View 1 (cartoon, rainbow, N blue to C red):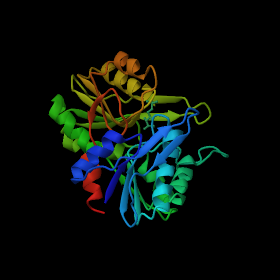
View 2 (cartoon, rainbow, N blue to C red; view 1 turned 180 degrees about the vertical axis):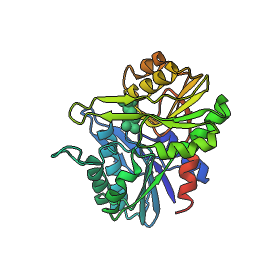
View 3 (tube, rainbow, N blue to C red; view 1 turned 90 degrees about the vertical axis):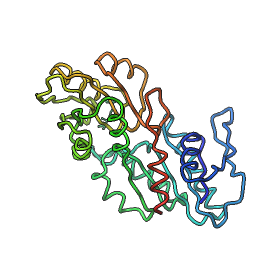
Length: 295
Ligand code: R5P
């Protein structure tokens, strides 16, 4: 097995290789002044199982293109099996045609990876696993989905949130958060988030909870604008919650998001290293390495 981190996941790719007891193989890559990418594999990979590690944020289109170049080049060079570990897969939220005429972006990306020669794709905390099960079956490429939520929960327990209440800010991931609440040792609830499919605007229905000074951990897949977390934090603080932590797998904060979370009263913000961020970080290297060992 050869582990090749892409330009977007150099640190995580090396950490995964280290967990597996390998040295990562580093690619030659550069950006031309006009923004195009150059990729070169430094050594022969014919007949090998090649693991490409490349996240796709920020700047999803460039990073996806780099991944496609890597996959297709590995195929051209005769790799026996190509495994794409995509710590954060951009466009996975568009997993349905919500309005007539919309691009089914998630499906299109999967199709592109497959035609570039990828045999296995490893994804972490995709937005709505249930919604994509049928889509995933359409592809011959094997698609494996992992979750980092248990690693995040362990981290929170070790960092003064043992026994905290667990909250899912929407219905989509509530089953998973309910499971993790058993590990956290506190109660569980979910709020309801509704998106206007034309404007993209969301509204949140905050439920009345019996919090009485209890600490709460909000688990979500993504922080982007920070709006979802901020509204949930505010709703909890208004009901007398103690410390409230905003915890996500993929930190994709746009400008202003951090301030929004702080202003809402976030006491702690934690993410994983699927995307490099300014937040306290829990690594997914072991999660991925352990999974690769099972293949
Ligand atoms: C969507 O429903 C996801 O689960 C996240 O809640 C969402 O992507 C977070 O985005 P934002 O930070 O912009 O509210």
